[in-house]
Length: 352
Image 1: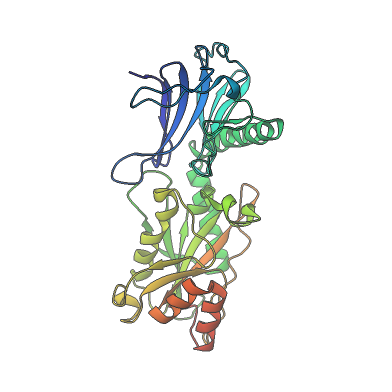
Image 2: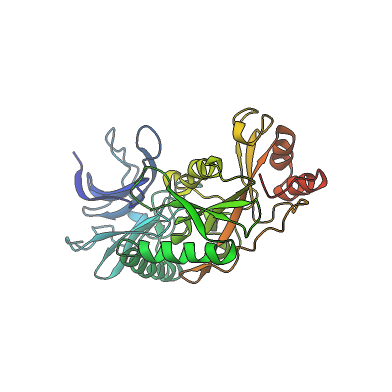
């Protein structure tokens, strides 16, 4: 029976890390807790504490494979790891490192678990399906990430929320207008999320926007975006011509996606549905399109929500657009720019 040495769930509750001592080797496991049952997202070999096999050796059923002698710098057994180890979650919540007195011992980045890459280990030699060597470049990047993540959690899990809330609401009141109503979003304790409604001047336009999403970087952005620092922090906004709760209810369904599912939302992303799923916005509305540059329409100019900065990163406000099936197919088949241009040509507005 493997011995559990360390185990911890991420602050977002979507991943769980476990360090297990098995039959001769230690492995770090990263489990996905989003689904109905935990599923292994990745598992990386950390060290061998008995001599590594020199030939092909079948592992007992239900146990991970042993690292071969050629895959470790210590084929006779790695140095004693002791007990002074800790798990450090990266800010995004999709990656974790084991750290000891010497620095990073092993790490599973957010992109691990595919293409025969499962993570890094200090004691791995070269690249194998069980672990990649912690090269100088990889070690430097990971240790910088560990320092940044520790600093982030020290701030975020402390008394950060009043600061986050005040900065977000102050920005919205400056750019849109005074707050008229507020709602908590989601059922999770962390991260804290709210939506607030603001009237745009004296006009019959109300903007409802989130505060709290941008206080932490979203998972997965660096895998798809060339400049992730420009897309990792978002808030959501929606405009209405009357002060109902439909906007807040829509934001509530969207705002919990990034940290409730360990994923990200960005420019041009769509959330599918079917006609009739969004009755408050019209019987033909079938999906949601997120964009920082919605069509202007022929109503009032859209307020400029740029300028909010969180921990040196810019925050992007993504406007929620309710779209019909035709526009949804266009967005999925081509790109968001084509869909927005299509909406613009049809006279659509940023106000829903």
